[in-house]
Image: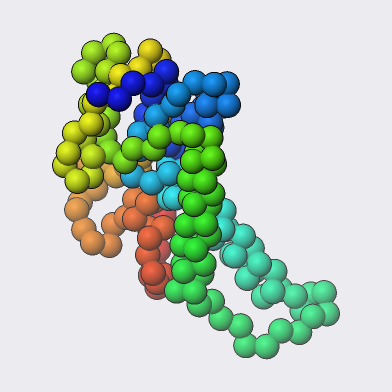
Length: 176
């Protein structure tokens, strides 16, 4: 069993800054994350959608550049390149979060935490091993997840937001 002053569960925009601040204040900190550092916001939400919105606004501006006397030739969107750029951006930012955590001495553990009692959690790691952690304090910052209403049929062409943001090509038609 490893002992810490604080265990933070969730490495999204609530969890990882809390872990960093606690470490800066002198606490020994472990951070448990089931998926990726940065949580939904960095990986499947805020950052990717802002990147796509920015690209769409740029595309729209260039399409209407002739209004300002700027003539642009044959323009097209290469969605696969845009999706690859999104992945590079997310990977770089995720790496930055990892560097911040490491430089602040935070023990990052990939897995799913479950409380054993008020002072201990059990972390089921991705390799199916279990690690028990003890702490005086815990922060639960498990964040959000995407959701499909149960009334929708299961179909390969029906996506929730996270699934849509992982597409490598755009569908010809889309209903939101």
